[in-house]
Image (cartoon, rainbow, N blue to C red; front, side, top):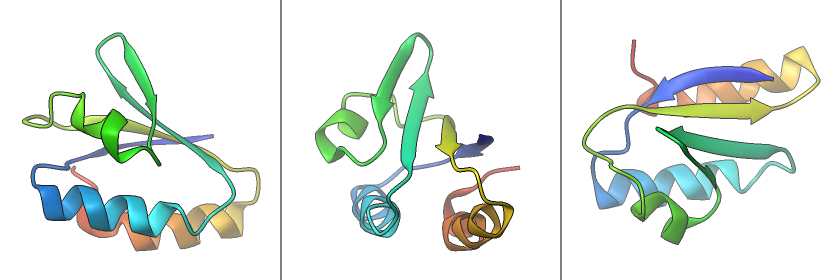
Length: 79
């Protein structure tokens, strides 16, 4: 599992983020405070406080796949 901080501070960013990660069969979880939601759920994402960075857990086993996913998610990653 890989964990990164991401920022989804606009509707367009949320849409493009979900479009990117739905290409993968892995599980993606967004964690904000005590809430954990499926990152592939647009409605779930909009239930979170998007004004600050959110923790993204990527449940992936293969290192090569992790690197490919992180490259695609680069525009959303903070820090």
